[in-house]
Image (spheres, rainbow, N blue to C red):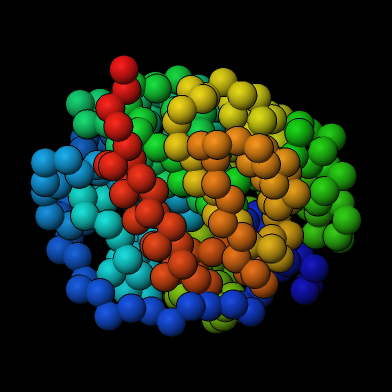
Amino acid sequence: MTDFLTAVTAMRGDETRSDHDHPRSAATKTKRRTVRGSLDELHTSTFGSQIRQGQTPFIFLHGLGGTQVYWTAADSDRYLPPQSTLVDLLGFGQSPRPFKKYTLDTHLAALEAALAGQPPAILVGHSLGAALALAYAVRNPESVKGLVLISLPSYGGTQGAIRWHRRRLSGWFLTNMVLTGLACVTSRRLLGPLLPLILRDIPREVARDLVEHNVMSSTTSLWNVLYRRDAVDDLDRLAPDLPVTFIHGTKDGTAPIDSIRAVTDGYENRKLIELEGVDHHPWLRAPGACAAAIADAGRTIQTAPPKA
């Protein structure tokens, strides 16, 4: 049973650890302004005041199995920069959850529709959200001023994902679509109400929202966006002058940090911030450190000389 719960937990990208945290600042809590779209659009919420001249907005994309609550749980919305838009990805949270196969194109089309008309922004993504932010920047370079990629999974393709995850027993669940689907259904229908009690190392709101998806949005997003694609291919297609900040825990058992070290070493516009002892959830374990890195990314972009 313990191994099964571990598989369920890892499916939404968690390593059941809590060995690192930073003291939280006394920053003023941002004001929330929720913007809802039609039933065919993604659910978004905007925090903070309107941006001033010269400021760049931020767009936050959550990871697999999560919702936008990931960024605000336990009062962590105090760390959000001005004009932060939080998105529920297609198939998750309060966004539509069509029962169909989810692919990279499916997710990007939904994001492009939801963000149409928005000014160029800095995209901040966690895990699945990081992979989507990266691919979005490749497809829409005029809409992205910078990237902050938290715990980006980079396996080098399906076989790399299998080798990485099957180092542990839970990895046999995570790399078998039938077992992953079974874990998803079980966690949602049988364990859902108990998840806040079982998963004590994450905020209750985050644990509660782990059931806000369906078996297709969870399993096919995992396979088609994270396992069957190589994030390095997207990194190679980015504009060379686009600033990219990676935030990664040294104890991340879900997304190998060595892959991120390899794609940052020697690149002028790529920076890796390693959080010692942190697992797959830097935002939950070290929100102050993440907020500082995100703010620094914003300052770097705002002070950069205009492109010729």
